[in-house]
Image (cartoon, rainbow, N blue to C red; front, side):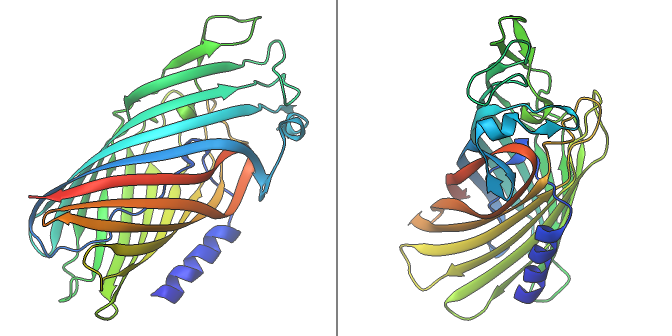
Length: 327
């Protein structure tokens, strides 16, 4: 199983580049548990993702270098920063050892600033469409079902579900271009929602390797079933590998490798040049059983491989904190 996941990650990193800029950030798997306890669980999680470095391909670049690049024959937009904070509530109900259902409800808090397309890389220029925005809105809700009744050990399962178009996708920011003052449309990839309904399919495997170590692997594919207002987000694949040490009672150390591959956005209102790529995170963390039914957890993600198409903002790290309560 480990060898299979390693092959999958190699395929992802060598395939056509596809990392959606608006999706840069936390790719942690929250599914490192089992179906042993029937009933309801709630999870509340906070993710901090500060996209503050410009990147092209596998390298970071300066704003000046970015401004001199071509965007399919047009001037390249130079973004300043995108600061993301996600507050995600999840409700999870386990019916029995085979069936489970989850609802994932995100709240997106995002601030963004761009120097526009007439910038020299350090300051904006007239007519470049530069703007700032600050949004705090409901994102797109996901409804996921899981089945793991294929084996007597219930170690292998499939997941299936939908991402619903619950997040708004037509918000505006404030223009900082003196030649075009007033409201300015926020890039579609930076809206709280995509406006599309997406199909979600996946497989996963978990195993107690011995009395000390647990293993978890997962692969998830997400595909937009429609486009809205001439915008369609790129298809994505997430691959996760996790190890968990179980010999301590007060702390459960964990280590994940999270790989994400996203096809560029498409449509007349999409950025089809500076979206797309591959990113792999190394994610150490730990869970802390503070009460019989309450665990808290913290993770720190560091990118160990990035290959971004066009010019995109990317985070140098992400941080996640949360808690899960079982009823």
